[in-house]
Image (tube, rainbow, N blue to C red; front, side):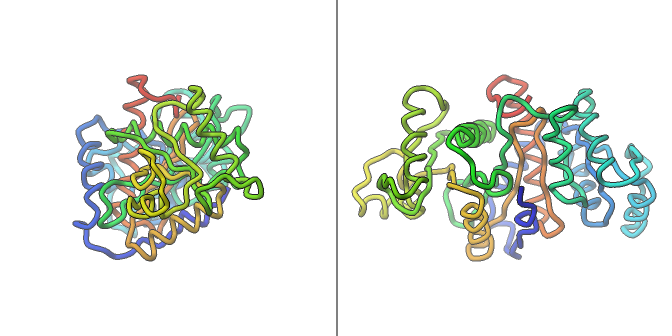
Length: 326
């Protein structure tokens, strides 16, 4: 698992340039607040993010971690935690274990990363005994709000699965499709990315892309149109697809981008963030509950959008529209 990407720089850009997040947060505010166990919110940044999400009615938080550190962070912010429950846990590992146990008992609907390392939280989540595994492979999705782009872009997997096999990519793709449906995207178009748009036996990612498309044809992946291999340009730019002579409902119009491995996804997401002014909201799917991954470097809209993602996913799962959690 890669935790470094969650420290991704969030550029300072006007809120008006991220309308997709505005709509997402507005939709989530129409739902009941999500019961969230916030794991080890032991610094000011982590705690402030939780309190802002609660103020907007997105979450009802339970703070899980060392009470003294949590209260010290609140003191530094000059706020009272009198109305918020705190589950005292001596350190970050214990906090992760306690939060996972709460999810298993049905006491919370989601987990939220506080000021601990992603690997610490995910170790408790994926534990075979007492963890939150399901039949699905656990995977991470970024929902990128790119200024000027007509729709949000879902990118997977850029944070958990380092070099996924074809079998693992099936779940990565299906989790991303489920997220797109939870976000109510009108059409889900999945581009399986590679460095080229032709199948080349010397480039394994092109073979995986072709196999995944055929699996979708056979009903092994459902809920979206798939195409690949596609290079990044002809996945999202209609003119690039036209010049290459690619006739496809996906080419040029993809809103889900599946990368061949983690390093490609890491570079893609960071490039969008640093060079295009994109915001990146992150969520982990494939567990019994969604897991909200935030970083102290995240912008406030990205933090709020990550909570909103979890709310939309939980609602879709309860309505049995998706199977990416539960």
